[in-house]
Image (cartoon, rainbow, N blue to C red):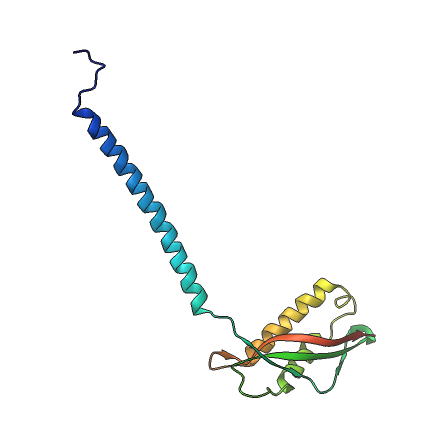
Length: 149
């Protein structure tokens, strides 16, 4: 018998090793994917997005002093959630808007990007102010009037 020949007893050992490697690799890949899917699904259910309710508009537009003698005439509506039992009082939202825009320059309000950044900040403050016992009563702000002079 030559040294290059494989005996029948050695052939099954190599195929069993290869089969074990393939099985282990498949278990690791499937297990990792399953764990990732589990955590992604768990994260979605823990922080469920609020459902849109009614929209509450401010009664009158606000006139806000800007820097350099300019003015902003602003009116907006609040997107309530279904967790809000009744229409929310808009007084606090008006005060937050006045505080957010007072002293801003006309240049800061002249580009869409800066307006969106300021609106995003205002929305976050309003949502925080209208959150009671972990339930969001307001989830968004819609500008209905935005005029600078």
